[in-house]
Length: 471
Image 1 (tube, rainbow, N blue to C red):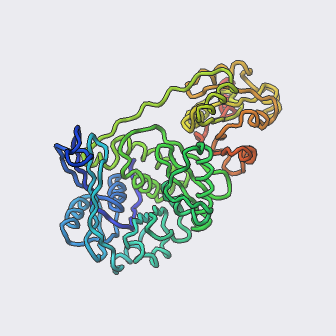
Image 2: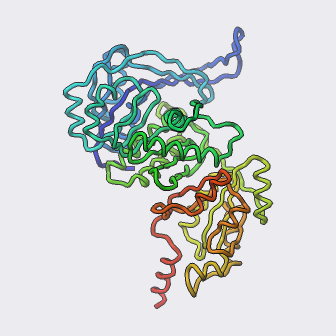
Image 3: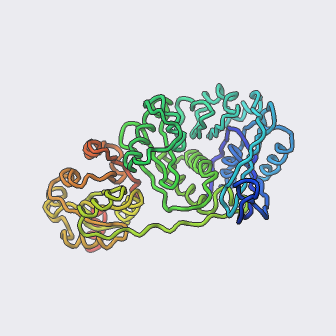
């Protein structure tokens, strides 16, 4: 990924350390692991990590942050100096430091010290903000954003990465990127949800969780008066809401057991840089999910300090030719049923990408296919090109498809009412209009979502090109 547009990052810097060793016994005086053979690494943290990652993308980055002249402050300056420019704000107290203790690359404890806060804005910081072409706010609740908030109102941020201890985004922010736990905390006063730990009840289905996230994102978007809200969901990717239509769920391209530390900063830095380059919000979020996933797969922030994580192998899909039996089995086991629909006349890369992404959302994928008569009514004479038996056979050959169900009506609503999937998926080309199935899914607690669609691929376009070539 090569950046082009300059970026100004505003937020609270930290100094992060990892002490990594191995643990194979407990201490004799307490039931705690003994971590031996430790090696130490130091790296930028907080807003400094977001700025550092954006600079490593090839961008011209300026970081405005509170910074002192103590040992931690001097170390952080040395780490950042080769990569970016720092505009330091005066602090009260010492720069915060966070030290993780890891055994076998897994955190077992964290030590925090330093309670420094930015004290006031400076003329240099105000001048940089006034000239900034794009701003990423990385608010860790330690004063930098507070002292610069009046000047941020006149310099609308492209991305705001919030923190429960920080303040709200300024109105007009183009994209706000809370993590799942943060979104739940922020939205609790707006939705009446008293839980603020960011976890859903154990019995809640994936669809219930998705619906909750969608409602929280829409509520936050209205409350913050932002252009869009993208709630990051860890291994599930991110849910992007514009408030009016069904949200866009951007799945992670792969699952990893790697170190997730810093993934939110990687996401925010990528999205902010792409928006600065002129990308659309949906494009920026999709790329940011991919970059954050790769970041975790490579070991997360720990990889910057020499640690690595191990990738996870995806679970094999259960094979089943009976959609109803499959749904019953998955539901009895407490799993999540995902369904997707379409004609799938000439199967192409856009279809395959959509179905692969849909399968990663749950424990099985049922594809609902229009019958030949249904396709003919929708597409006209001459369609489908491939008869139903061929279309079903090709779909069943895909490893991401667990079952295929056929409907003869113009819409799959009767079939959906029988299957009652937890999640209903359509391609992102429906983003401009409400999904007619969304209201139906809500009747049994399901959630309709949009997935990014591979641009420029369609059966109609393929037929047109084939016809042109044949002539």
